[in-house]
Image (cartoon, rainbow, N blue to C red):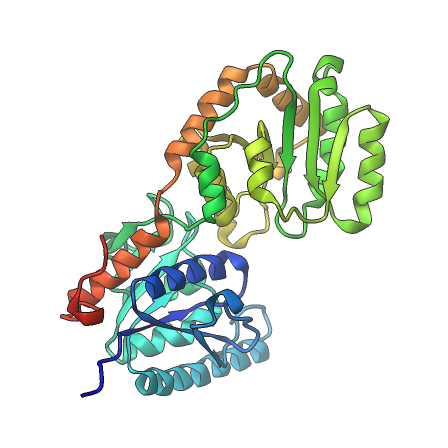
Length: 381
């Protein structure tokens, strides 16, 4: 008699790394527990890459129903309908037992099709404001995994199905938070880490050098700025720091973020879901400048939740100036006890073992359906 195949769990995800990274973390954890995993994404989706070659990737028709053109909206809606039919056929062919959606329009066909076939559906929401796709799908979800204790944009019934699991981060970043925050002494070096997402943030390029140059000479002599800068602006920003005698390390992208976080006394950054999760996991205080054009202003909600927990300070971009930023940096660098308290609060805000907790939630839905997993064994708690 042929051995019974392990249950297959389908992940619906695509678009930005903010959706794909937690999806990949869940896939890795499920594989380690003996389950099979397939990814359903849109035609632009890159998949999980060679590190998760065991995950078969299937590309569906999908489109974001955005913009003001009725024609564009109609075409996008037709693409989604086509994607749902494609997903229904795939889910039946693959013998899927559950579908996990990670938001973004690329997740819509898989989750709609899964719910239509009566499969268990779990959604993962990375932000403090539910994204548009997850708001559309929430009523179909068996459970909704959240990264924040409170999530805006859901109904009372949907909130009752929410479970706080956290947003997975890289193991190397979680390891930073397991080491004590280095209390800066009166003569110790200070490191200001400035990031603005994968493409940097022009507002930081314009304001940070001028704000740093306003700091007292004694602070500037101790300070190193590590800043993510758009390529075309790099030489100009470098010249500004040189002119005021501040050591600066500028790159268009930091591929050693765990080491940068470990060395950071303070950050100035955006407040996307992954950024906030990494700040918390690493236990690093931050001045958060939410991206003002983020959908539903979700970055502001993320930042306010982190700041309310004591991990940082919110400075809205519309109210930001060279003077206000310089004053904030000077105050924080001259009050190391404040930085230490914020570092501890940031660490306390972290959700440990987020990938494992998310996997527990997904597998719990299978157990409630009488399917306990490989060889009849329950998943690890």
